[in-house]
Length: 310
Length: 264
Image 1 (cartoon, one colour):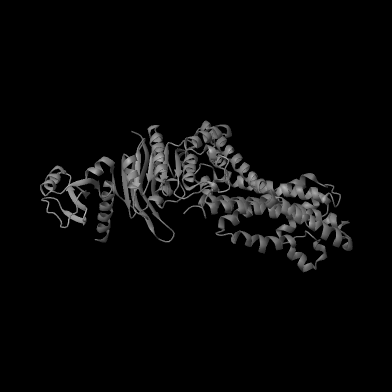
Image 2: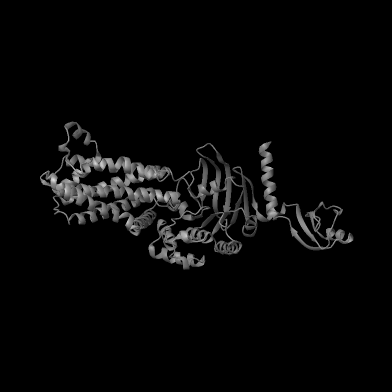
């Protein structure tokens, strides 16, 4: 399979001496939907900044669909569409003009640029707003405008830096469905996000970056399989005054109507419910305490922090 | 790289250039009450007060009426301030709003980005220069002595100050930084650049000092193109302008390639 993105020994040290990247290696296959996760300041935006050429790398190589960043930046740029975290369009320009102008920068003739602008603005529900100055759009619309702008030159690799930050749930879900369709059409997508549910729902592969190092780079399925313990919250029908004793299941009474139970993936919940039934404890509902990926993410980042401290 | 690839690169860059120039022209025509109207009003006031009221008391200068003498200088003054102002405000505005990133992530060559912005500045300078020229016809007769030289000088001047505005915008970090140079450098140089007087009126020492003012050479070369009189040698003025254009162009391209003020 063709490699969409190949990064080798990428480092970045800013002018103030801060080293944001410590020689990262990363490969993303063509057609992949890849999540790059990490806490704030981990190096996600620096990596994306280097890919989009808005940040100069200190050393290392970046290759996109075979085009080297140092040797043929123009061809590399044609392959990439970038949706940054911050709004970066002219607030006084009209929505339609912003998209058409961006196409012009990529050398797309005006007629084709206008057709494509119409296509993507319609797909993203912005066609009605085409003659509105961009500053008058809502936050969600501005984000969709940046997606339309990033797609107008029809890139093979779409990079989104926290595309759903500050977007309401309904809109977030419609953006997920739009991105999934794009990916099904063959566009490779890399996204960074703070919403781990988003990464779990959308992405096939995942990289976790922390303190400028890749601490995990695997498939979503394999990563989730490494999760040994899940924590469940049980809502009880009747009030409970003392913590029950459940053999093999660490348990905590959160309040008189809620029990927190840790379940090993080899144990399952059948035995848990049998023991609860034995003690006449009725459960009316059950839910995960946290997102599965969130637990893994926290584990990995904490592990990395401990390693660095040692 | 084969010929077909180079041709398609060239075609793409030409589309990009057209896009940048169109965007720049659209910007200054959309806000015409801020860009085209004020210089027209200011220059009409100059014509009325300096050319007409005070000029009548002054009498002639360089063999022409005072009004005729100052018109070329005032046209150049408009071209200089508007070419500079267009590029500095447009490019700094793009940096401030971060919309410059739209260009930086695209495959447009730095030369095309620069030529696009400079063309926008030159066009605004020429548009204002044309408006001021038309207005001057209400106050005096104008006959062009040397059309070719007039066009060359106005184009080179607009280009030089557009490039200067670009350098200013690259280094500017806030809105104060884009007004310091026009206020403290450009305005004094223009007023002392022979717009309102012939340097022959000055004592010999200040005549020599004035020769170091680049605006003096531009104004006089333009005045020579229109009236046929000048305080300086035209060949020296044109050579200086060509050299300044080349040096400033190279400086600007270098700034763009390095990404100064645009890339981290």
